Length: 294
Length: 309
Image (cartoon, rainbow over all chains, first blue to last red; front, side, top):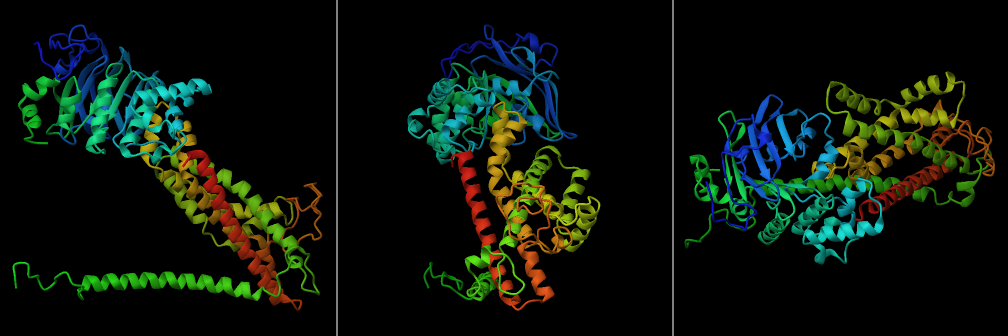
């Protein structure tokens, strides 16, 4: 299957469902496990299920995200998108009673393996949250937080890193004279960009975004989306969103999640974003993207 | 009547029951608040007026006297000294215990029991704590009546209180801030140290103030531990902490201002009981007020330092 028209200039637009990633081999062969030829798999899930106590929250999801692309996770509330997202940096570890089965791979390395350092993992896989959550410290210290915890102390190098990160997060021009001001003094949209700058400063490879614009006004939302498209040149991004226009605007590929009869979320369909929104294979996806439920 | 001609309820202020109830609630709550303020004001005003003829530098810093009015200097010093000693024990241990209970211990039957015990023990009648202190810190240790024994007795109910209040302050820090730190690859301890603790400081300062208030005000727990006597004629140049005559020594009897008020009034000796009581009470109130303001001020500076707020 070949798609020739895209919403964005893509790095690769070939989608071939018959090509299975080596890392995904052996798991159930659903379309999520496939990426186009010539694309490098960056991060992916193999038969991932998440339980909260005895309750199954996410059921057997496999998918792969190519390097330098944006994958959007869409679906109704309760379909397990955010829970699934948190598997990629093992934030579910923090929830008492949560259990994840299956494997998550970053550059082929198993992230669920017992010898994985979650601290190291979270430096490589950053996360932006739904509610902007800057720390109660200065703008500068917010950005320097991650590198400092890693032991960085050189003042000049930190100045450069802070400026670079804030610039990449499209916030530098607005705050360059106020770096000593509290991060909490910024507007909601600026706070969220500060949180993105904070993540960029740790020099991650993958950025997870959990509804990063849902608490923001439309103008701030557009700025964040613009930023995401720029970041896509260097980073692999997975975004959870309730906003279908947003998924259509920013992502290369879209995964549609739904809640099954057992109330567990599962992956219905994953494809090129254009295909999901114009010509999905599954009737449920069709109904959802056309606004008939959810 | 037009189409917009209004229902009987209209938009005019009426006498609907909900409005009456709302006004009644406002009046009652204002009244109660005012009553409490009035009581507090009356107490303060009484001692300010009563102490007018008594208060002087000699009274504040001088030695007590059996025949004249004398002063309460050593007792005031003892109160401050005991406060510092008790807080030196209770604050670090209490905050650390609070961190453990909030961040590491989790929620299960054992920790619930500990929390219940913390609350229960901090409300044990202080005379009982005093008697226990007599056995544990006076007799068993063979120290006799000492400031340290008194401070340890105070710790018995201050430490659990401090731990409980610290735990609550830490728990009140939103989960989002913790997640943000952990998601950046900070360790749990780094997250506690750099994000959670700074946000919890105002709550911890409240804990310190509540705890300190009890140290200042406590008499019963100190009667049989820090004792009813005190060396006088303090020489603050004497830094030998093992010399019972040194004001810096924890191993000396140390009657506090509160205990002294109780003692002069219950013994009823001397002709200046009333004046000493009034003056000492006013002094105690002023000290507590100063301490509370000071603690809030320091807490605010600390928060600003840590958060750039």
